[in-house]
Amino acid sequence: MAVSPSNPLPITSFPTPDPSNLGCPLFPNLETKAEKTPDQPPQNQNPPIIANQAQTPSTPNQSPEQSAAQNQLTLLQNSIISANIPQLVTSCLTYAIGLRSSDVHIEPKDNTIRIRFRVDGVLREIVEYPPNIHPAVVSRIKIMSNLKIDEQRIPQDGRAQVTTPEGREMDLRVSTLPTVNGEKVVMRIQERTRQIPALEDLGLTGMGLENLKKSLALPNGIILTTGPTGSGKTTTLYSCLQLLNKTEVNILTFEDPVEIQMNGLNQSQVHPDIEYDFARGLRAALRQDPDIMMVGEIRDRETIDVAIEASLTGHLVLSTIHTNSAVETLTRIANMGVPAFLMTATINTIIAQRLVRQLCQHCKKPAQTNEVNKITAKKAIDRLNEVEKKGFAPQVLTELQFYEPGGCDQCDQIGYHGRVGLYEVLQMNNELRHLLVKGTSTLDIEEAAIKGGMTTLEQSGLLKALQGLTTLSEVYRVARPDDN
Ligand SMILES: [Zn+2]
Image 1 (cartoon, rainbow, N blue to C red):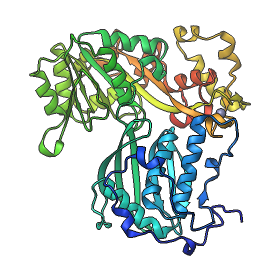
Image 2 (image 1 turned 135 degrees about the horizontal axis):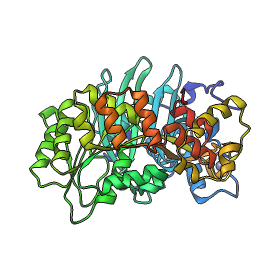
Image 3 (image 1 turned 45 degrees about the vertical axis):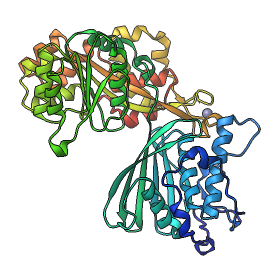
Image 4 (image 1 turned 90 degrees about the vertical axis):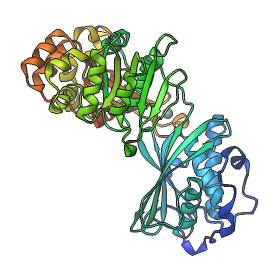
């Protein structure tokens, strides 16, 4: 019998979990668990419901990583069939890590529980399991992350750590939420010892990269990254800090939470609940003989005031702020009540950024682009500054040949693999200072910034699409078209 989500399995045919099976060692070490295959033969011959995308046929051409992923999926299916809850949770996590997922979602629906992974910023359906084993799965995850098992009416947050068979240490941030169909669980996965990419490897190029490096070489000033949650702002800051991290300088960071630990930095975790917030951290830093300071986020007048004071007294300050574009950041800070003369004296660089999915280089193919899209793209390319244009062969910028995903074994038939950043780097110059002090409109400031060499998010995306790194639809998913 073919099983698909529209043809659900009879739920009663699944065994109920053995409650004594939940109390096994408090923390599952994936290293030992993953090697273990279920001892008992499957008690139910019907396979669990597997979403189509995850169903890659086993072929002799598969790479070792792919067959490992396939094994994890099989293990996950088997643990669902045999209602082996610890194994289910372990193989779910191992499979998610193998696919480079950032989040695991376990969601109760009407008659089934769905597991989805967020890979490269997009959710992917993996498997469904029957609701009768869901309470045991949730309990298992709660035990792992020190949450209250008997509390199902309110949301809870916890943490856990796992080590993969390859020795990679992963931090899990676990969150539960009561829904009408039962508790929903989201586990955010973060590698504790992950490599920080160099600025060049993030996707920063051309004048934007040059300008940022110039500002990083200055002894003082403010450098800001901006963008929505999950746009890679923190990674960009760490790439900057990696460049600055030398024995001769004292670097202090104030974060909530400390996401990545880097040797040589003095990293402090703030606790707003006991009145240790970003502003207080920065003030304390000024008494710690600092050279460079990084503060997790600027969200109030107090923090920006201390950052400005630090910059004026000869320190380099790096931070993030929540806005949509580089120019909008200036408006936002002005709206916090900061006078223009202080902004122009301290802010050197503002980087707005987004992450887009990167095309799988093994199966990408030339796309047919319709005329409307070509006209929109052409308008943005025409406004590109001359220095940036010189980096491309003229016919690339006129022919406008874009690419689309194919689907192959290398990318799990998705057509994308990994992500790349789009960057809009605003560099303060005398013309911008003049316009800011005069109180010119945002649109005029943006126009002047582009003239001064800023590549907009849209332009940055189009250049990456023309290079075959991403698609036009990915670019317009995150960057709005220029409506000038
Ligand atoms: Zn591919």
